Image (cartoon, rainbow, N blue to C red; front, side, top):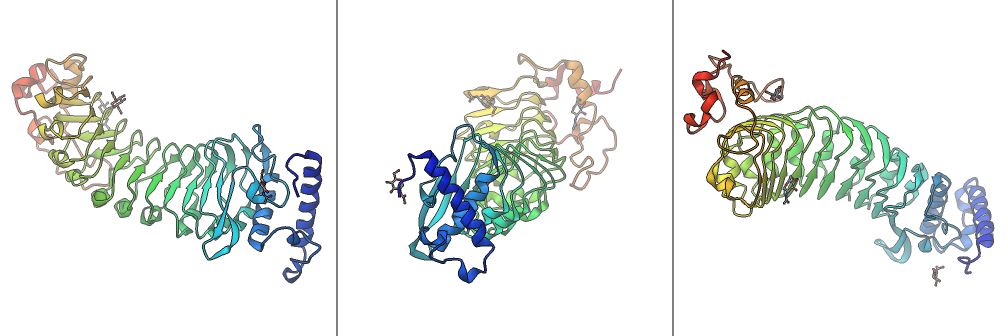
Length: 406
Ligand SMILES: *[C@@H]1O[C@H](CO)[C@@H](O)[C@H](O)[C@H]1NC(C)=O
Ligand SMILES: *[C@@H]1O[C@H](CO)[C@@H](O)[C@H](O)[C@H]1NC(C)=O
Ligand SMILES: *[C@@H]1O[C@H](CO)[C@@H](O)[C@H](O)[C@H]1NC(C)=O
C-alpha cells in the first residue's frame, strides 16, 4: 500500500487506524491481534506499540511548522520522518523502532506517557524544538536507551529523575531548558560518558559524589549552584576530558590537588565567585589546551608551571586580582591578562581597587562546604594569602606596608 502521495487517503487511513487503536486498546489483550484489526497490517506487536506511541505523540503536538510529522500516518512507522527502525537486539527477525531523531524540527508540544511504549528505543534526540512539560515517567520502560538528548526545548520542573532508571544510558543532554531545583546526587553515580546539564535553573550545592561520575565531558555551566568545588572532583582524573563550570555561582577556592586531572583538555571555571590562588599543582594538568579562569576573585601569583604546560593554547585569566604573571605566560600565543593587578601591564585594575582587594584575607571556606581556615591573626598580613607575591616590591602602591586603608 503506498499512501505517501495521497493526502486524503493518508488522513482517512490515519483516522481509521487511530480509531482501530482506540477500539483495540479497550479490548482484552488476547483479542488484540484479530485479523480485522490494525494488527493485521502492522508486521509485529512491537511496531504496533510504536504506532500507538507515535500517534499519541502526534496528537500532543500543537505546532509543526516544517511538517516533520505530516507523514506520521499509516502503519509503516519505519517510514515516518525522524523515526528509525532496526532489528530488535533480542530478535533479529523483528523490526522495531530503535531511534527518534527530530533535532531542530521546531515542533511545539509535549511528550505523552504513551511514548513509554517505544521500549526498544536506543536513541531519542529532540534537540532544538519547543517541547514543554517534563520527561514522562514511562521512559523507564526504555531499558535500551543509550542517548537522550532533549536539549534546547522548554522543559521545566524538577530534574527528570526517570533518567536515573535507564540502565543503558551513556549520553544525557538536557541543557538549555528550564529545569530547576536540585540535581539528584544519583546522577553522578550513573555510568555515563557525557553529561550536559548547563543552561538550566538548577540550584543548591554540587553533590559530594560528583567525582564518582565516569563521564569524559561534564558541562554544568550557567546554573545557580552557590557551591564550592566538591573535593571528590579529582577522583575523575582517569576519565575526565572536558569540564565546563562557567557562570555557575561557584565559590571558595580551587582544589589544591586539581592538578590530578591530567587528562583534562578544557577547564573552564570562568564567571564564578572563586577566590584564592591558582594551585601550583595545575602545572600537572599536562593535557590542558583551553584554560579559562576569567571573571573570578582569584589572586596571588600565577604559577610558572601553568604557562609552561606543553599543550596550552589559550589561557584566559582576565578580570581577577592576580598580582604577578611569569614571563612564560606573556609568551603564550593566546592569553588574556586584562583587569588584574599586574604591574607594568596594560588594562589593569586601578591601584586603589587592588589595594582594597588585598586588604582582605582570602577565606576559601567562606560560608562554604570546606572547613574554614583558621582566622589569620591580622586581617591585613599578606602572608596569610594563599599565594603572596614573589616580589613584594612589584606591588607598588599596594605593597604590604600600604595594605591598611589610610
Ligand atoms: C517506505 O517508503 C519507501 C519510499 O518512500 C517505499 O519504497 C517503501 O516501500 C516504504 N516502506 C514501507 C514499509 O512502506
Ligand atoms: C570579589 O571582589 C570584589 C571587589 O573587591 C568584592 O566586592 C566581592 O565581594 C568579591 N566577591 C567574592 C566572592 O569574594
Ligand atoms: C580563548 O578563550 C576565550 C575564553 O574561552 C575565548 O573567549 C577566546 O575567543 C579564545 N581565543 C581564541 C583565539 O581562541
